[in-house]
Image (cartoon, rainbow, N blue to C red; front, side, top):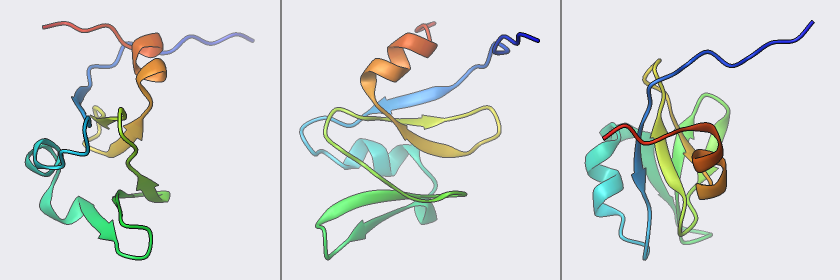
Length: 82
């Protein structure tokens, strides 16, 4: 059997130049943290830590869950609507 992905509306914010302010405004307050050992921000997800890298997008899916997404993946799966 073959399956196709259902259309899904997401929200996303681009993480560039290590400017974390936009991300902090976008996600729930308790969803983001800084790993002091790695000096790197990460999202707390259902699957554990999802580290942010420069150029990533932070995506909020239709269920309200956050995750990081590489730019290539975002552009491949989604089309900007506004």
